[in-house]
Length: 400
Image 1 (tube, one colour):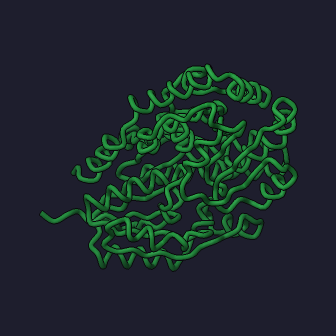
Image 2 (cartoon, rainbow, N blue to C red; image 1 turned 45 degrees about the vertical axis):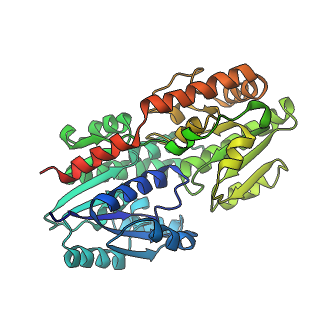
């Protein structure tokens, strides 16, 4: 029996799998390459080209095509997005030549199913495509922009963000209804997309999970850790950038007064210039850049901090911290979609002062630290299983 031919199109190389969206994409690509004839197309951004050969060697692809793309966030590109009637993040991932490649690949390889990774890539689905189209919504994107607008103090940026949230809302409604199936990683995202007019029967919940291999490693010992915070994530994703800058500007000096020896390791490639400039002001805030093996930082850091002020969907970096047993301190946004309890599986702060208080408790109280660490790992073992979720994906692809 011939395998179905699946085209997976994604806005960046789905490797190395060290941050939220990339982990989801990588798990799916690996699974799809083992079960279908998989063709993959992506953009290369930042330092992606460094990892391309390693990526190709780890998956069984029938064909792979790519294109370098780096469109800046600037006023010129924003105006172009308006003129082309594309939401700004969609325009930043627009390339006429990539569109030609997609169309050529579909015809040449007889593609049966297109799996669109992120709403940004739906613009490459041909209107006359006769096969199945599946859209993976990592987030209800319009919600992210709306929340960003609500938090932004600069009046011009606030207005632009509200306009974008409206433009993205209309776009998401349109493409979700055009897709044969929409995979969401959070029940909250499904509710938010239904709210704007997407049909209920379009959705399938595919829960993203943490790195299960982390659960196999021995428990971290409190006494072996430093008085250090850890953040691991995509440093080009606006909610991460905003949250880190907000946290450092408002919390770091207060934390240093309470814990003079505290350090903060921020792990991720391509940090923005504003974050680099801010971190240089503080000797104990370390931007590590890309780290291939995260174990060193998991084992030496006492608390994982995820200071998100906006976003949507489940945050994989937070699930990974819980899998590894490093206690998580985050905001209500950071635990959306996670089946856990504040004070038992993680600690939640509604504002800067509460985040500081929770961090200090975990830095100083070994008993509480061990309770959170143990409970988090048990929750991950009981509730989250990649095999079940990926089999849901296989069923969606194969069903008539």
